[in-house]
Length: 280
Image (cartoon, rainbow, N blue to C red; front, top):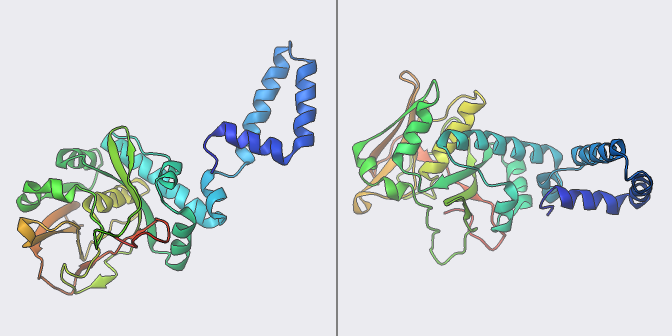
């Protein structure tokens, strides 16, 4: 994994030693002339432009790497609305995310979108983030608001003994990276809350922010998605819906045994190593 620009320049020198030596010799013979130093800086900048980014080098699939990079660009925009800084993708790799495995899953199922999600920000930060947009706004029902901290926590793997990819701590915020089905409605419909695993609230809201930032249609305009984290001592669970008529994302609660033709699960896929759980 290439960590920074210096690593990439070292790689280019290793790949093209003859060219690097010639440039170094030319620079050494004119080291006192500022225009040569400027040329060297320009050459380094061009070298960085033609070298592949860390994502492409990690997964070896250009088209999918570009999709991941675009998802991170959209998430970075969403993070700015939340007033937080998004970690670089290398940080997730170091924490256990297998980018090649993530890419394979995306190739097998094009509806999957990489979603880096922050936890522990609190209800007000999410509501304010959507208030910065022309639409939609976010409304959280009282039952979900009272136990928002549960919905705002990193989901626990099932069973808890299964290792899941580690969270990334960045500027006092914890982040996860998972693939979330980004179809108009949940892929598994008509099921109670027992049929998980489920997308977390921060993942669902970040996915909607990402889509709003690139002017893509918002999800759940005609459906409801269960959200991870049972409430009311296990009796209730939160669900997500987008009210297109009122341009409002609503987080409401229903009993965990509830079923309906438009209610279901968006089962996440983790980006962990093969020994990790596939979902929380």
